Amino acid sequence: MNKTLNNGLLFVFLLLLQVFVLNNIKFSGFINPYLYIAFVFLYPLKENRFAFLFLSFLLGLCIDFFSDSGGIHAFSTLCIAYLRLFFVKIYFRKLPADYPFFNLRSEAFGKVFNYVVTLTVIHHLIYFSFINFSFQNITMVLLNTLYSSIFTLILFFSGTYIFTKSQ
Image (cartoon, rainbow, N blue to C red; front, side):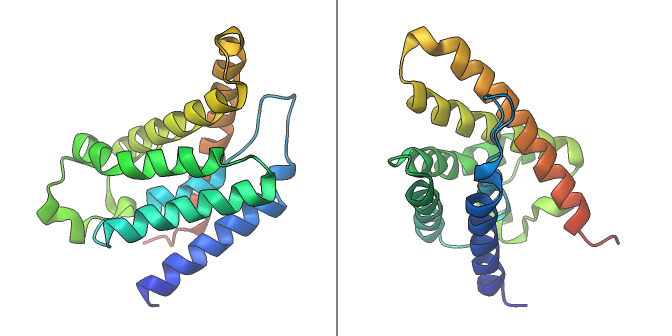
């Protein structure tokens, strides 16, 4: 299938999944899964960076629109989309010449795990920091970040395991 069509379907699927299913899940006040950030992990590196940043912002903005959260998702998603290239260079040791051949599914699990965990924790820390926006609530920010990150990571890795073709 066409790469643009795949990216578009991924965008719409993650948006609808987040809005209609995952936004309605809230365990014990701390666990909110935010699986829509998988778009940032799975988007190809070789594509136009401006288009990627715009799509990431648009995805976050759509989530904000349906969640009535005032731009917090858009900001946190745009931050990890901007930082993604930095962490690809750190964890995968890729150069700009390697970007057209980079595929997250073909990399070692340990590197992918570190990459996804780092970006997920950064996203959640930014998101929950802006929701609470007070140093008095730092324990709440850290608890929300920890528990939501764990649940998001479980969903991401189980989803990629289920939807990845065995070779």
